[in-house]
Image (cartoon, rainbow, N blue to C red; front, side, top):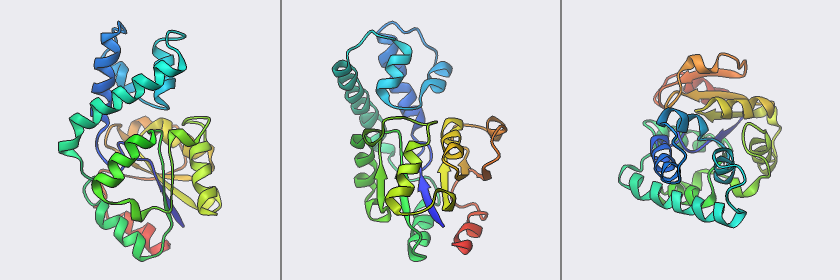
Length: 216
């Protein structure tokens, strides 16, 4: 068995900081978008999000520039709170001691992934990392997680993915994988259409996780 992790909202509870950063930037540009609407739009690559809100308005270079500006605002706001979700340090260590291969598959750009991995000194736990910079298609397309499995040299069906969002779990299903869902931002009821969810957790102290460690 192999463990794949989404990052934002799954390993760190930071999604409200992303939502707020985008909300401030987009509304300053005239989007007139609510926080609830912003939450629904916070998926996929930054450039794709900008295109959904402002179709055809910005050049590719401008969208990249705005993406970096948003991430700098997010990092400045979140840095004092940067921490792994409760129980995750011990869970990562337990998996490592059992020689369970682990990877990160995130829609974040590498700039943000490095912010987390180096800020928390956890890079050594992961065999490979797939970021938004490494794929052509964002979640719910399966490319992110299929690339993780390929880099690990493992079959997709042998991968369990930790996710927090319906779009992420849809990507997991499209990749032929199973998912453990952490309910940091979305309630269980929002995942009712998926049959690939093994179970739900509030954090990584959940005793259900011992089943995965024992099976691996």
